[in-house]
Image (cartoon, rainbow, N blue to C red):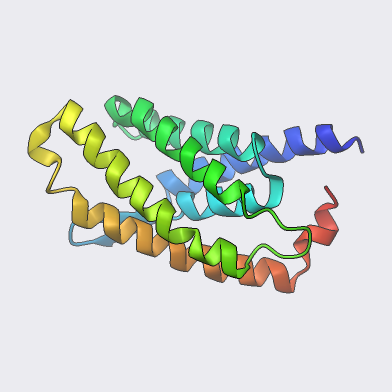
Length: 165
């Protein structure tokens, strides 16, 4: 199969997985919930790189905001997820998803999430700006843990060689 066609196809598949993992796979925490969508953006970015992961992240999570009743956050979500996907695409590796570099990248990704949604809240409804910080921190930490577990399992399965991009 043509490598570009494979990347386009995988971008669609990742968009759908990110949407589903954001909308339906959630762990409730005191200040909201942690979803698995961000971790899948990290995996997609390390596997496919840019611009494919940027498209998948923006589509998957942007559509989840709209479908979940948070359409006012969709523009901010698209920007935040594009930035996160770009950061993780810098960790693209020919052999492994989970490297020291991709593990460390979870920290700037969490900072982008917290800062990005703080800025969005300051525009949309200032009363939520500070209230949402703990939940966004938990989302960042949860996404890091989920990414590390999923990436380690996919590395063990030698997914990069099987996908052959």
